[in-house]
Length: 278
Ligand SMILES: [Zn+2]
Image (cartoon, rainbow, N blue to C red):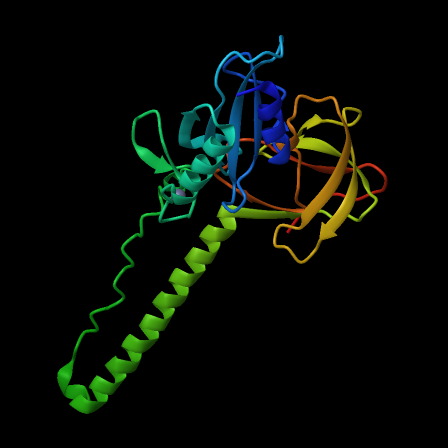
């Protein structure tokens, strides 16, 4: 496959070049999967970063970007002469890759060899084992002769019913508390024309990194109907080490309390607008 064909295929497929290749010296490209959420198609072009010459056949794989922004490979590398063909095969394999039945994330093969949820959602189950809801059947000392039997029966029935209702309310409340603990909703007001940069926010809510002066963009559009507050930004400057896909895209972010990493978010520089925790 010629250099021209590889480059043309990547361009027509809207692939973006990565700044880094942690595994070698060849140029890496990626883009979102056309239909699968949080899934990217990754191409190792086989083009040497320094010489610009082909040093190996292109290979294509697919990853799921998990809740902590880590890449989990869901389709292993497919190597061959026909790049477009490889992309098509890997895309369709990514579609049919197994999903976690608990949270819907794709599954991947962990170092242990086990195929597990890419979001490691089981880690948030721990300590959440349903404490066998105490049976609220108090043994009321039954002094039979005081009341006539049908009356006792009726009373017991209402008692049981109200106990059931209370137990249900307690469970619902506990579940609500658990989800509240699990998730924080952050949002920021963004308007078209806002000048933005990026800041890294640590998992314990401290500014870990400010990219002012390294990253600059102009908000092009705001989709306020979307759940995540989808934002389109015209990025004009990026001299940071962040890749294009690592730049923020949302004005609404949900953070989970089991998140282990920091997150990159918008910072407005043309006016005062800050993130607020709902
Ligand atoms: Zn899961």
